[in-house]
Length: 205
Length: 205
Image 1 (cartoon, chains in turn red, orange):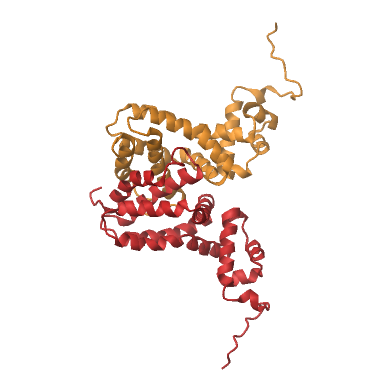
Image 2 (cartoon, rainbow over the protein chains, first blue to last red):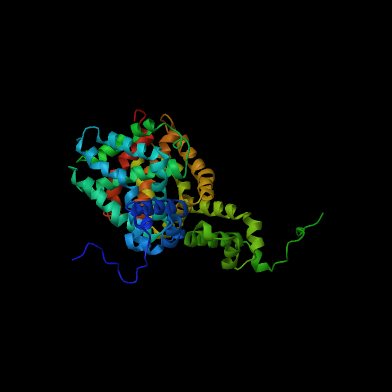
């Protein structure tokens, strides 16, 4: 028995600064920025490693392939979604309004909007990225929401609500169609809340 | 006075087959395919000319810059939208249902869906393409719809309806989230029609 962790064969030696406790988070933050700025296609593990000041082997060590780095970046970008069960737990009354306000709140903040838009853009243009978004994030997220709903076909209902919010995102922030791009969020909430409410809570709808 | 059209200086001679009456349409069809298959970034006037079997100067002659070729391709792809005023003229009753069924009908046909998806993808990833979509097509289209509506902020209302349909398009055909990607169109129509109806006709909404 020994206290020293055996070095894996073939893995190059690193200095302490490279493998410190914050390194994984640092790589992830850099990866997010790289994917956001350059898109899925033009981002490489080598480029992420260079921007993070680490060896590419370390990126592979922490995350695996480029697709797995992307999946991790997607998950981090969807972190605000972890608050969804809390919103759902508030009960059916006013649910549509709470959800609409929550999503617009996240998106109105450019810091949280930028990586999300990048992820959505990548997913829209690259089958690999779409598959990752679908399998790793959307499916789990929608199923978690669906569990809380008391309607027929809850996953379908959750998807309909998601489709309304995705469409707002595309027209307001990406295509920037006016007046939708400039109206105060509360005007959008007022119009969209009854839609989400019906999809998520109306068994007859 | 003469019957012959003077050739512009510096423009090379072409044989008759290249400048025949269908050439413009042929170039446009090829451009649409090229933009659809390769995306905005990777499509060039040179590539379109090559695929159409014409001189690049001829593409410029008919359409102008790459952006203008793209705009023409976008307009052609949105041709089904020319039917919208007809649908609107049918009156308020059942409007949401007619519109939902119309859009899903266009999209369920892979021939009309492919170029539309390509356009949307390009617009989502390239500011130049987004601007063209916004200015050349979306604005005119939404304003034409808005003219027919008897609600406050009719353009905003038309955009909200568009956002719902764009979101369905993204989740059903691009990200292919299940079950939304596989449910029969009529199930989507049934859920989405009341949403469109409210946005487009309910003055109180």
